Length: 311
Image (cartoon, rainbow, N blue to C red; front, side, top):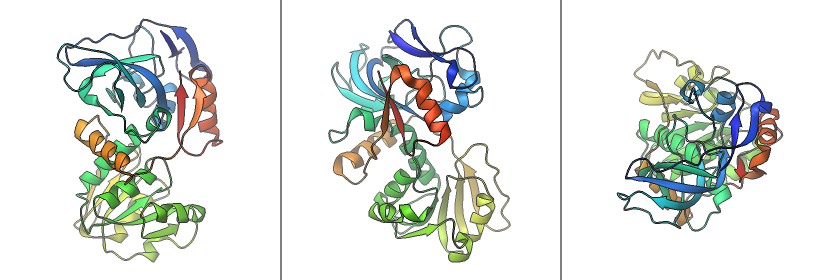
């Protein structure tokens, strides 16, 4: 099959096209999926450069990036009951172990996929799993529920815009920080209040009354400053894994989150997309063979939003 493989670690130029063996279903509950779209995430860029989860890539054999995937089930193991050949699916298989989505096929356990919502294209769906699962699992750590007051930093980003919608779907009242020009969109998505991070500091605009903060920024003192807006007993979830976690002086829980494949979470997200409760932002697409160009576009800031490769 065709794939984009890593020729060592470094800049985008280390990505090159190659013909590699197609993956096979190893366990009876595995499926082989024909890839229609593969999403690119920041972890892909870090791993390509030798950071991220580079140590988990195979020492021998082709090194293939990519976790977010949407496609069609090609074949199923004899123990698979959830899907049949021809079913459209999406998911984030194996993370943080390699899934190899920058290719024509991936193979993974069937329970790491969900049925593709009928109202979203494969290209747009491929931008969802890692971001939505990160958001949902962060909100779960914060015990978000009806009446909760939640602040989402970086609310207009790829994880943030989904975190806002998922929090609203859970019954929370959402405050967001973002650029002023994104305020109208975030209000459409359900945020009750949007603070321009370039204006008055958020900790001055808000009192210590919030139940949770989902910090997708993790820099510029955001984690420490976020403690000031949390009530006693509140929770700060710092999402970037490299971001420092402050030591609170009050009864505040501080935690990180490492996203993982989860059938229940992914199916819940799929149901919300299918119902229209969660809107998926359109992704910019590149041909698979132009994966290096796609990485360059993301790193340069030329592209705002998600980028997806189409085989």
